[in-house]
Length: 590
Image (cartoon, rainbow, N blue to C red; front, top):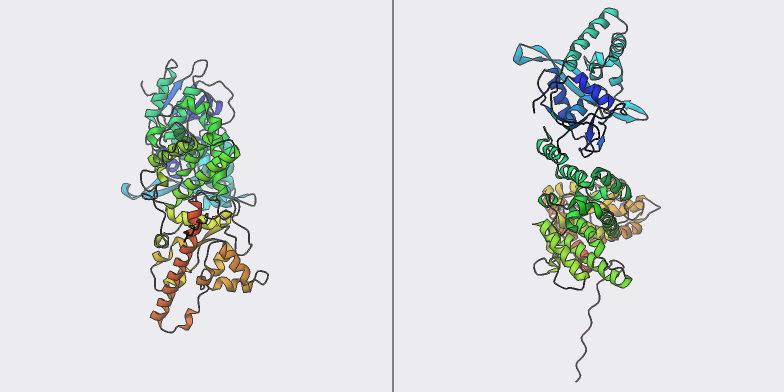
């Protein structure tokens, strides 16, 4: 194949008419402001932007296709498929036609010190946003304000014969109808526009006789200039070739049917990981490449049903999103288990207790600290065997190798916002207790959790100030509660006892109600009812008292966590079900 020249006006004519389109398996836009700005400056500086790859279309298309992003409805039949170069052509089309809602691009001139201070055209991308039905900043749409800033709108540079009237009208408004200034400005814009009308974006043409699988392989190997194809992008292409279906469309269907999935992980990752698990493979990039795509198509409804059930199970355990999920490893395990769940009520309840036991041991042990993918597959296979009545053992249940944490280990766990399994596991136990909001009294829920944030129970300012402690020691999971913004703001600079003064300040609440609501976070109220540190005159004594109270609080809360932790890890539906009481030994006959 030999590269052929094609100027930007011809590219735009092909896009506008629909004679060039994208194979449906092509990924969506992935370029950001940096790549778009870089390409526009490449055009302005007369530099090459690399060759594209197109496939000739004669008669029926070998691939189902779609129009470019921002392109109008096609008026002519498709004659070419753009296999490589989508990001470049789309960026030029959308920026020059002003189709980016979140950014507007301008040309400005800057002295080039390396070439004697000669002015060189540059690109500036201004972020845009909507407020009260108006797009801000409003100066971007006011020619006078733009001209004051010595900017030229990039949309006036488009290689379109209809743009000349727009240019003159814009220049007249920018110069407030000063005829000479307007014509000078118009001449400057037309001079810059020449860079775009004369820009050559060459292409390589694959003949229409090229077999579809060969074109697909070339597409995978050749892509891309700056942002490589993801594993999912590659599988989308292979899936379409194998099944004739669009995996992009199926992913959209998934988010429509199970919209909650996006709260936990990317739908693409959910699809691949569950598909691998269903095939008996560990969820890894290498195994994703080996997926049986025909099977994925045939079992799609089961995969969706599995994800729906998995998320419903997590929500029933008060895990409402990925920010609070201790480890994402469990989600594909649960989804892949769905088909194996017993249908009869009694057996199903037993199976759900086993799944709960698995889930919480995954959250609270070090099982998935290493080799998480392979270990999750081992646990899945063990759970499947258990459902089938084959007790070969489930590795995560091995209490010698993966013991539950001690009180001391709970006290050392870090802040739940960090991606640490045990830290988030501790927060998850607190949410399982109800975690009522201190002000509204509303229990934690899928809708309400987004209004909460992690809050220090012993305030950070107190511990690092009078307590003379390093900040890292304040960020303990046991010193964290998920509270609403109002309580967060009121309590962030006080003493622990300020929680109860909050109740007094809110006469409709009262201190006892605050105590009751704190208990739904598994907070030891007595150890939090401390303060009056300002009465201790000696700074060192004051710091020592604060540190002693803080450690006592952490230990008391860790001890409060022990019973629910053991109950949940035994598969009990805590707090409705606690640990079964040990039977008392029978007295020996005298």
